[in-house]
Length: 319
Ligand code: XMP
Image 1 (cartoon, rainbow, N blue to C red):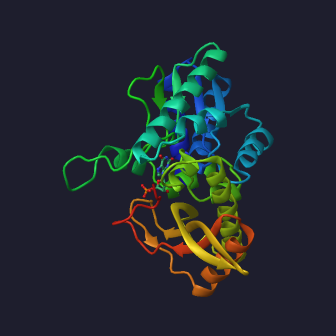
Image 2 (cartoon, helix red, strand yellow):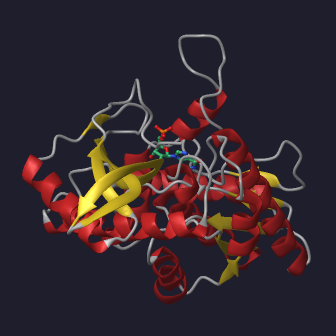
């Protein structure tokens, strides 16, 4: 694609001009955006870049392995894998306010990045895969007075004071353009086509307080849901699909017994840029089959509902 080839060259020049001989830390989230940003920056400044994958304990099933193998195996780009799940989950204990969650996560990410920067003798820059819609949505809501809907940032809510300057080479791009750039950079198609995954991870798919037990239930249910989507050939038709574990229990009956377990919501939307979205009109048989599988296979869930809200008035994530 000639446009993206030109963009790639320009972006590389801009990165070089911004960082000079400085060192850059790039946080990888498991999503497409941060991966594309990292590969682009690596092309621009090579060994001045250190990629850090922070496992905050809020990843989906298998996510950490996929990212690590893409970077180490496919690109041979050095990657520091930090297991910070105890720190993140500890700090999130008892936190149920969505913005406090985001800010807590954002601050901890920066702590980890600053600690990693120190280990390599300092880094002046922090790179992120922030896209144009992220920029717009964290700043204001168009049409009205300036209101923050959520502290959208690749890592959640970034602290106001930070020692590192941001490098955000995708700030002007929409998702489809980032995917085109990813292809231009040679990222495997399976990776480029991945559904978006937010930096704060499953924390924003588990409304209310977060516990390891809830995350574990959510991870299992989400994996089954995505497996059914792939089997039905719908993965590429849908912009984003995921499960949400609700902080609600309800009574059910299984076999001869009474159950009192969690409600799981399934979400799937079509969209062009994530700024507006329509709920995906599944066939009811698909939903029935998926709900049955989840309830049979995951202990702790006895009811599954489907979210038929578009954006607006809903947002894509539940938090
Ligand atoms: P919402 O929920 O605001 O989400 O309709 C729009 C798109 O943005 C993703 N999202 C995030 N991505 N960091 C990210 O990298 C974040 O903090 C974040 N919050 C939401 C969301 O998954 C959807 O694709």
